[in-house]
View 1 (cartoon, rainbow, N blue to C red):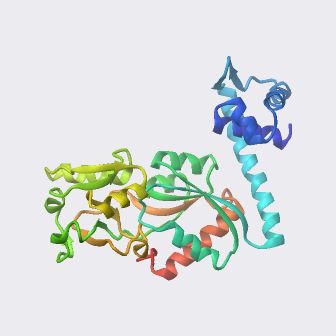
View 2 (view 1 turned 45 degrees about the vertical axis):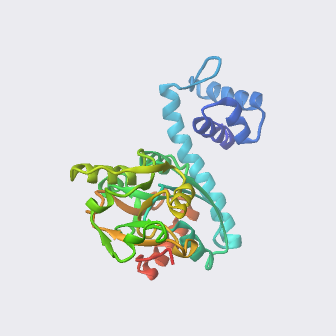
View 3 (view 1 turned 90 degrees about the horizontal axis):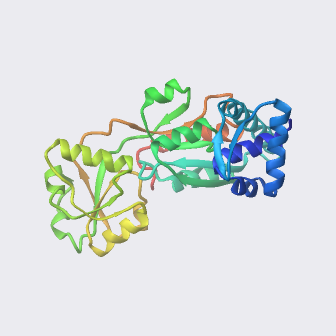
Length: 306
């Protein structure tokens, strides 16, 4: 048994396809299949359900896969630790982020980068459940999103709570001049407006829908998209207004738009920066978590988008 076989096994779990797993492993498919069969022969266990295509792992394979994740994580951590000893804090950090979180990720990365210029980032947008699974399986190093803190504590994650600044309505004053004199809107007023909103499957959107429904109201989306860029374009041309967590957008990027706070109860989940427990997080992730926590604390985490 060697580390490459375990890496191939983890890549197969992620890709769920022999060809793509081979590509991710930078080997040919026959090589990957042969090495995994050699692993099965050495362990005297069938790890993979094979048909014409990959059909998942056997019960024994899932047990071995759990160990493989841990070993590969430690191996990757060792490589990063050696690199950091030589070069300081550097490497590629994998970040999983829920859409429309109450934080400007780019501002955070810029703040960290001023102190640690050797970092590079790979960012993926994921749902809440996907983010917990990705953190548990070490397929991302850092998570940013909305969580039940009791769940994070049970899973022994480290977390830095992010400030809940509330919800803003974002609009173009040329298209909605009646909103300009207002500093706060009620949910009844917002229910009368055309809106540009994220897709209904997103946590932030579900929170909005549930709150309005509980109050006997209904949102009226003119435009729905998973793309924040598309939503902001819709706001700019006057299709509608957007509802966003405060701190999510960088105001200077859209100087023509204005915002107005919404009188709404806080979310039941809490925004947080999350990493695996100490000892299981990679050295790079642990260093980043510490640096990010310090930077957020220095900013007061009140308006990190500026």
